[in-house]
Length: 179
Image (cartoon, rainbow, N blue to C red; front, side, top):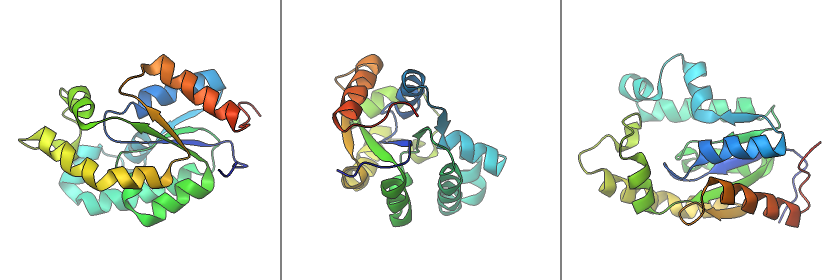
C-alpha cells in the first residue's frame, strides 16, 4: 500500500454508506477539517444537486463534480465524495494519487433503508428505488474496490465503531493523524 505524503482522506462509497456522517466524526477525532464534495458542488454551481440534474443533466453534474474534486485538492482534510464520483477514470486517478481512499461499504438493502425518506437524491428518484440502487451498485462496486486503500463495513458497524476501525487502520499503516 502506498503511504501518501498528503494529509488527505477521501471517503468513497454508495449512497447511504455514511460518508458525510462518518467523515464529520473522523474529522473531529483527527483534528482535520471536513469537506463534503456535494456541499462544495452546490456552492460552486449556485444551485442544489437536484436542480443541476433537472436543469443541466447528469453529464454536466459530473463535469462540475470533477472540477470541484480538483478544487478541493488544495486542502488537507477528510473529504466525503458523492457516490458516483468513481464513475470517471479521471476522478479515480485523482483520488488514488492525492490521498488515502477509504471505501465505506453498504449493501443495497442498507442503502435502501438509509435513503428511504431522502428525496434529494436525483439518481434514485424513481418508482422502484431498490431496483435502481441495485443497478447503480452493480456498476460501481468494482470501481469502489479499485480505488480503495482501506475497506470499512458500515452495515455491521455504527459510526463510532467505523471511526475506531479507521483510526486503527491508519495506525497500522503509520498514517500521521496530526501534522
